[in-house]
Image 1 (cartoon, rainbow over the protein chains, first blue to last red):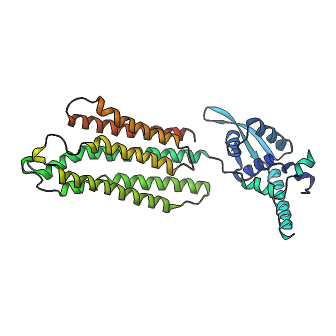
Image 2 (cartoon, each protein chain N blue to C red):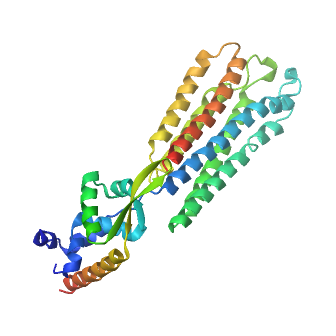
Image 3 (cartoon, rainbow over the protein chains, first blue to last red):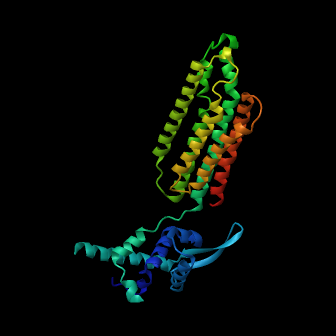
Length: 99
Length: 233
């Protein structure tokens, strides 16, 4: 699957699932994301950092009830790139279907 | 690394996207918690109302015990009295899940709630009518030494509420964990078995104690299950 350079960071199973979840939910707690995606904390943290370094998501600490928790949020750039990724994916699938 | 990552096929990428499940938001947990607490109040109300009114209505129907059954209208009508609690429980449950669905922009299948309600009411009326029929058919007030069908309060009511706890846990299984509901059902069964052994006095006294303990156990256990779900929201 030949993708533009800016989209290759999304073309990894875990990072793709993370960005998909954030694209749908917008803002998600780290623990909720880990449970929804069935990932270990280390795995989610590693891939979240890569997405954050690429400017596709933001991570912040928010006060929830009586403790702080990490919350993840997709950025505008992340939304744009994910939409571009979906468009590219649809093109590849259509090409595969049409032979 | 880049070549390994781009080796993921388009189909695998599509499957990964489709595999992303909804985050179990706090709203769902809180909705489930409210449902448990609503049914705790409703079922405790049914049990309490029955304990308080049944003996009086039966006495009115009987007139003087030596005359036996002089009327049965009250006893038959008694079956309908607690229905209001069940109706409130069903309406509140449907409203809570509908509000949750609206908030999450999900579809809400009201027909499940109404089918469940219909089954619940039919079941309640069926059991109630059967018990009243058996009481009138087989119990002679003139020869009364013990309350009629004491096992209604000692065993049938607790078993029905334990069944209700299991049913609520089952119906909500795709949204919240079943374990708290199963624990509630187990607690109700355990109390049902223990209280008659521990209560002292006449059989009538045991029924009064068992009925009261059961009512409070229902309220406490259902509320505890509700709060457990609620605090996870």
